[in-house]
Length: 418
Image (cartoon, rainbow, N blue to C red):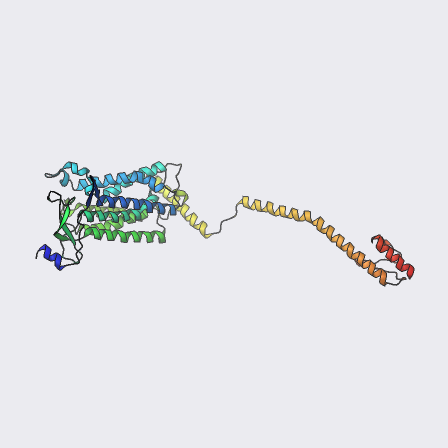
């Protein structure tokens, strides 16, 4: 059965793009480069949001990216060239092609390693903790890798062995304007060269699943001190190990095994070991701020462990503080006592006025009571009562002297009439 017949019989095959390069005048617009750039932008944007959610300063991720991205691109290219050196320095190779990064070929382990070196330099400059930064950008980095895999799709590279699975990937023959075969820069004529395992798609889906898993673990367990970054590395390596088993393109091999499989296994074990033995908990927001104290170097194991223990203690203290209502400080108590004392003083100042008003009211009531008693009692009455209900004699005029002149006149007229 010819390739054309296979294509006609199985309609579920995944077609490859007809081309991966579009020429705008003399400028070549490459899908691979666009995917890489898009992944970097998304990683910086999302990483910035995650860093601020953890309490870090705005703009820190972009500042660190100025160091990490160039280092990562160089590291990824160096790893690719070193592990596939025959393509560039072999009998039919062209060494100058090693600089043509736009044609594809970035080893993720080299990118992560040298990118980490660049991030570490940036963290030393801005004095922020590298492990905490790694936790913040771990899911965004893996998402960027998933986006970058689309560039392999446009370049028709990093695919697996031939297959007849319904989701197999069609690889087209591409030719340039002169009719010469050019799989990278040419345009497809629609002729299917082969149907292969879409390993780029497997890896992209695996990366997206690990991104979702990392986000959920981070929310539930509050991972910190670089342990989430270790989970990202371990998760990626696990998937990459099995993806490598499906590929049959040219690659450096050791004992018949692709070198990337060895790298995946070794890095996976190292990441798991770090996750197990690293400091637990998560850094507090204060620990993410730029520090005036120089942070330990990677080889200063004792200092790193001491800093980690201090961070863990601070994290536990912060969690305990959230569970218990904050105590009032001495200054707050003193200020409240002063305020209460001032309020009492104001009440005491108002007391004489209140007493004076009450005395006036009492005197008015006394006057009214005296008038009523004088007009109703007999002239030979020997007792009178004042408003305070105190005994008084008939010959005592003290009560009458406390009343007004008008009231006294009325009393005297009443007595004369009687």
